[in-house]
Amino acid sequence: MKKQLILLLSIVTMAATSCSQKESDGWKELFNGKDLTGWKQLNGKAIYQVVDGEIVGTTVSKEPNSFLATEDNYGDFILELELFLDNNMNSGIQFRSLSSEDYQNGRVHGYQMEVDPSERAWSGGIYDEGRRGWLYTLDLNPAGKSAFKVNDWNTYRIECIGNTIRTWVNGVPTAHVVDDATSEGFIALQVHSIYDDQQPGQQIRWRNIRIKTENIDPTPLDSIEVINLVANNLSEQEVANGYALLWNGENTEGWRGAYSDKFPESGWTIKDGILSVEASDGGESTNGGDIVTEKMFKAFELKFDFKLSEGANSGVKYFVTETEGNEGSAIGLEYQILDDALHPDAKMGRDGNRTLASLYDLMTSEKGRSVKKIGEWNQGIIKVLPNNKVEHWLNSFKVLEYERGSDAFLDLVEKSKYKDWDNFGLAPEGRILLQDHGDAVSFRSVKIKEL
Image (tube, rainbow, N blue to C red; front, side, top):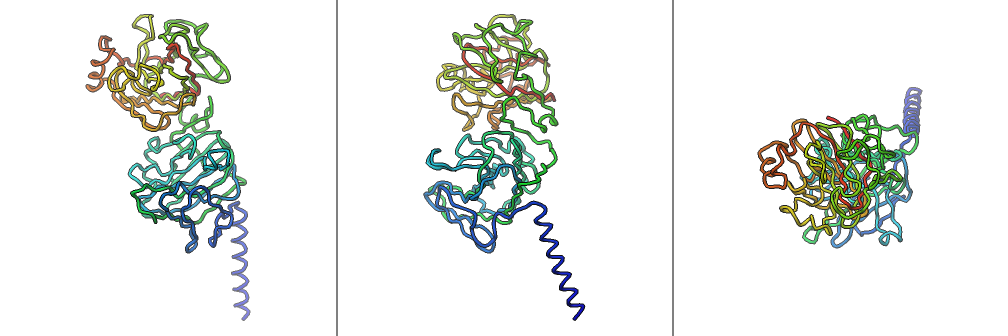
């Protein structure tokens, strides 16, 4: 009897110690395993119910996206949960999200960690539901595409600390965004709407949903791509990845006018961390003129935010050598910046190869849904690899790729306005240029990583 009493006391002590440790590590269960206490349903009327200790969401026909949201809001936190879904479903985990009558009649909007079992494999990417669309596609992080397990349970992790948002699928880093649009909001489980030709009744299940809001230690840095949407900011991981500001957001240091030893005295303004071309007559280099970097570059990744006014034309050129003379815009490979709807250049050239994000007059971009409205900031990326492979990106979407010097490239040049330029686009190094095309265009967050 005495031995049995000692054993019972030992078991009780161990259980109490385990509970104490669980409480002291700072994690809080968001789902009690029994009912939906602490949660509320928003927008659509998909079915949410508790079955065998899991939250089960079921699709319903002719309903918009549905969300089971926490009643509490969260700012800085670490969230972990497990999920299992039917193969042909799409879903997501909302966080720092909002719903108010003064925004599209209560539409849920905010950050979402994607659940995508399709061949696209963007699970773990970050989407801005009801606002800006995709912030981080998994095309930016191909290694993360294989993390999601189809027909199995997957562990999702989200870290929100200050302006930094990071995600993991099954322990694999999938997305890293720096953004200051929303600092606090609810967490929600999405059941996506279905198309008319899809059968209702598809299901997604969630379990082991827990959150930590105090004494949060960020996961050590990794090396995946960072999408930074905070103006002229370099995050710790960007610095570790080798990025530096190419324009410091304050003055003209590091830049000068094309064919000049000084920065233009007029035609360009710097205000509130924004570098802008002033509107003039819509002509090339007829006001302040183009500006170029003082430094030459060979292989690099260049990022830049740009904002168009209505009907505007501009461009970011690379491998600019200033060897062709000093009239008009300096020659170089060009990432086209254009209001496709209103500027006539969009209908010139061949097959749209003068539209936004194209390789100007050479290759057409495949923009899809990636374009922001006029007056909103877009983010462009130009990647020039040491093997001469080049990529243009627009708002986290890769929109074209080519190889400098390849037969296909030379054929494009031969069909373009540059056919009479010797070795066009083939310089081993060159400057980066922001174009004055006589229209109001703004730039910020110009940063570069040399490869």
